[in-house]
Image (cartoon, rainbow, N blue to C red; front, side, top):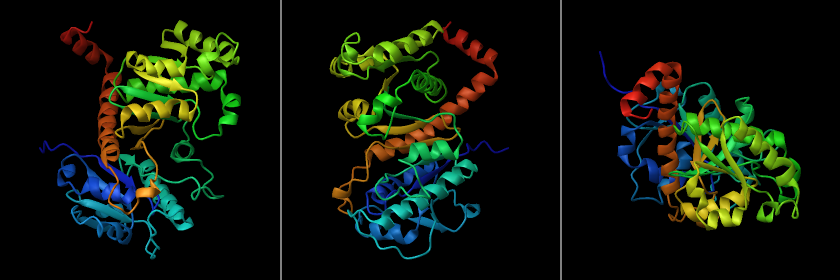
Length: 356
């Protein structure tokens, strides 16, 4: 009987064709050691990859071209041609075509993820200005995947090592944040975050901090009422239910004093409140993870970077971290499923380790 461990099939979307997505893929997958951990499938077109490969001579990427996944090569990088036509490539330029084929790559890859043909998905950056349309009315990957998988909730978590920041609201104008902050929303996001920390990160009893929406967390209601009327009652209810949820904390002091290091995750109220601090601290090595889905999706923590596209200047560190994180989360989910299916076995292991 074979004892060979099955390697996961990891899918990669190309992102905006004129951004840095394909450069990141070439730089990351040209290291043949990656094949020891996974079977990669890039959802793009071989001609598009070759366009960027010509300017990246020091990165030797060999790949097999597929028209369907039934012929996947487990010992090589695989490129599934999602389109056959010639596409004009203009690195660094926002074009309709760049967005059109970014969506094509994403929708084909996500359907393969849903169908179980790939085990996890790593998405390269897209630009919202050229992807939204009547056929794709989504503000980004997270709402699209939530809709595709019919998930009750989908939560954006940015993380590096043990530093994790989740967002209560994502890509909405700052003027609309307050009306989205409700008890129902905060409760749902905290429940999704807690469950993800347990299932995806292996933290049995996660400790979560909640940031206030207003300056100084409202100063007891003198600078906005959201903390008093929404955040505090929701946090108190969850705490009384036995969950380690604390706050609301003033966002500026919370990060400046390093208080985030005392928690397993932080829930920020809006995009820049959480991500300005996160990206400053993560220094280009963060990962964006979509919690709440039945499948695993990660991405780098940056955008299309049109200003450096096609110049061989893109740093692949965050993309590589997203790749390895997808594999780690798959393994953690497997362990969680085993432990929860057989709680007596888990209790025995904990006793043997002196945990209880």
